[in-house]
Image 1: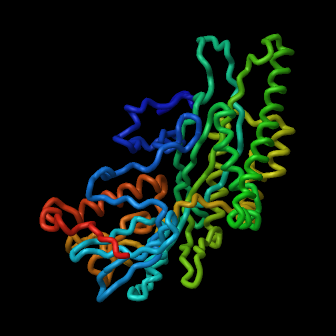
Image 2 (image 1 turned 90 degrees about the horizontal axis):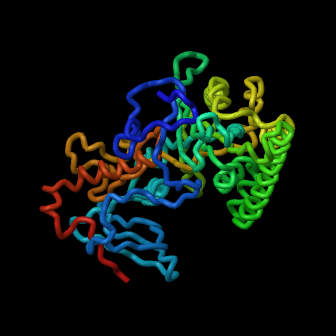
Image 3 (image 1 turned 180 degrees about the vertical axis):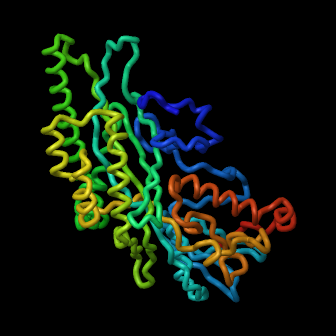
Length: 430
């Protein structure tokens, strides 16, 4: 248990391998979680590799897009690929006895839907993503001349921590788990992370669609937002500088750090892939319980957020709320949720579902070698996040576990020895 809210737990006490151990169910406990970001809030690490990319049997193709799968009597015989590097189409034939494993995330259900040989009505169904709602920015004043000679406040650098809250709905029959992600540290080190987060949140939905079509708009708005946030920080520094000067502490005695967070939770209604377009329909807030969970989760944890820092000065808080509607008081929460649900929807963009175990692919109950195999096929498998319902905490770690589990089942030592010359080998056909 963390006595000091600014003090991070020892990794040895909170880690089990790469995943934190959550043995103690402490209310409003903060946990460190593995992240792809470095200490400056920049994404520098890619996913964990479960295989040796330098193995001579692997031909890694970059800038290539799988367009469709070709079947003959339930067997995937070849894969159509667009080579964007060379600007041409290619076909990769699967050797007899070979397996095709889809690990394309949201692309996997779409590829199966394009295959006319597959008639399963569950393909592309039961799709969800986390509703992702940014919360307020809080200021942590850090004194240089602390009585113990130590700096008080969040880490100088970026650290990803989270907390989980169990939220009952009003009818009492259902509960949902909301996940809070916290970001804290020196603003100049978090400016890129913070600007990207709020740029994804602030624009109205129509403008978000335009940014998707015209990427240069994102660049212009991102740079503009960074300038705006820099101005805010300058005002903070002037305010606290004057305060330190007037109290005879010396200009700059107080170092300003910020902390912010976002709340994420699953939707109650299932989404789906549209058959005649590239759209994915996510039914955010179509079930009234989504709004109930959002309101209760935020209200119940405002006190926790304030324990990590102080509210900004009243003027800046008013400007911030005018633009974002993000609440600092319980009575402001309902309006924020209503505005968010209608105007500035934001998802985590970590889709799950569409090829669920037991509905689209085999669970491997009868034969472990069939784990992940697409029904009505002989050699096609799926091993990504589309296989499972949306996890509550880490989509990334769940995806790793699924890939590792399916691989263990279908490529056991016995199977590998029997099919040493055929498994996962493809020959290129011009």
